[in-house]
Image (cartoon, rainbow, N blue to C red):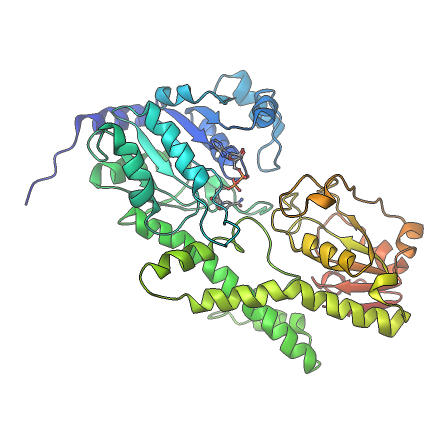
Length: 450
Ligand SMILES: NC(=O)c1ccc[n+]([C@@H]2O[C@H](COP(=O)([O-])OP(=O)(O)OC[C@H]3O[C@@H](n4cnc5c(N)ncnc54)[C@H](O)[C@@H]3O)[C@@H](O)[C@H]2O)c1
């Protein structure tokens, strides 16, 4: 067996990392890349953010973050101290010692992995790749991407992974809106392609976050992230199914979960809702589904969970329709409906894949007049799936406005909404988040849980 010999460039980079002399480049300054860039700058690294969106670059260089996880005070401090700058000029990749890829990994129209952004980014890195650089993929993807897609592109011009440059995967675990955990306090799983990369990736992330968990290969690391997201998708589907079953039996799922969660072991609460949202849970599990086909295997749990979760908006609409009929004797086509919450989860402004859009779409196709209120997402931006809603604005709430709607549909349970004024004035409330019962707010007219 050949004895492992440390390549000379490994020691050089390790030294630069230790002395905080290494420059970190982060490609994709979104919900994942921007907090990570701030964490790298905080750790003492000169940090360059690369993005293709000129408006984001201009905003960030003026010290203004566009997501809540990074404060303007912190960002403007880094910009002023020349610890952080954003650019669209990818030639600067050659100046970086560490390059981290945080670009989107969506699904195609046929619900298959769309690795276009990862591939384009890797091509851009390959143009500037030099000896001694560490390249890390953070975008969520199927097991095998780092070694099967990223590595061959990077090696195309003759440099070799593990000898000339170093490659690894470290999944992001960002949870926007989570007040308890931040980038730095969430343990980070890392893996390198070979021993030199493994050692360097561990050294680098140990300088940035509190705890690093090393695993044996990039594909294990990729599988960790997919496992976490499949776990959530399946468990959310399970409580969504139980919600429908218990409802038929006259049992309140929320009361059941609250009591079950008192068990100190072997149970973890998940909550039902109007459907799955966000950039991760509705999408990532299907990356594994696609990859499994290569092995002649099917991901039955994932498919079933997807089926149940996707059916939730229609379930909510049918409950709403029945309630309108029963309590107001009107049909959907005659109804004025206020959707409370556009973001896919509480206290964030992220609207990606939010079930509120689907609710709005189904209801409007049935002839309802639909408005929304969201203190975090005040204007609907242009989206690929629902371009017809672009430009619509959140309505301001007061007693008179609320009374003009036949029904208020709670889709997202943001904290900074005046639920009391809704409870006192709404003609009918459909609550998919149990927000009134949880906050002990009694409703003057009718409340239906869905
Ligand atoms: N949002 C989350 O909470 C979260 C959590 C864990 C993992 N992830 C994963 O992290 C990855 C990034 O997600 P995100 O939420 O940060 O996405 P995002 O859409 O918020 O940000 C992506 C950024 O990449 C930029 N970009 C796109 N193509 C580019 C290119 N070719 N070169 C440079 N920049 C480019 C976009 O302009 C955007 O600013 C995805 O794989 C996602 O699944 C996201």
